[in-house]
Image 1 (tube, rainbow, N blue to C red):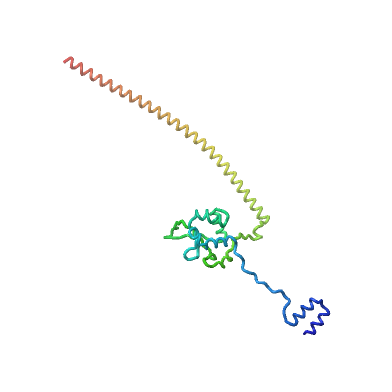
Image 2: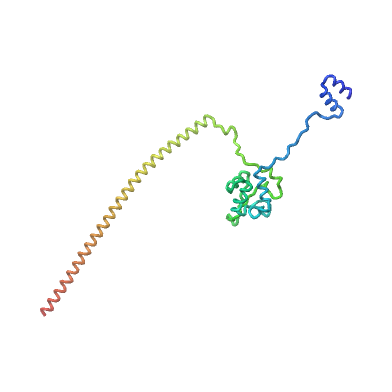
Length: 241
């Protein structure tokens, strides 16, 4: 085997000959060693979240649940003012919760008798976010809206169909606008008629009240006249007697 290697040296370059001899003597391969990829690092958001939940100094604001399967925000105001600016450079709790949702965290709702129990603490859960299991963080992936290429591009026929449907909707909207304008004008006319009738009714009520008052005054005058006549007739009778 060594002799064959020396013969090969005459035909090959010095470097290639040396490699060939080493391979023939030791039986090694000339392929490059394969490197196995290491674990994918967890996103920065999840790393920061893990650190602040694990930090016992934050236990009065955010901490693990007793079972270590969920974590709770115990004091929203202090968490917003103290924790968020320190770890995430903002103080927007809604933005923090949106980030949790984007990574698949779910809000845990406590149920009692079929009704949601309202508590001051906000509790979140993820299958790969557990106490004492930091190696699971690499399995938490951010949600990505995957759209197929064939679905992203509409064909010409489908596009024309959508345009036609939009045109029909636009025509229907125009008809509805015309009907609404007509109803508005009719409604204004009706309101004017109602206002006119109210004024007439008020005038008639005043007129009837005056007539009633006049009739009552006449009746009162007639009653007084009748009473006076009876008095005069009685006094005449007494005088004659």
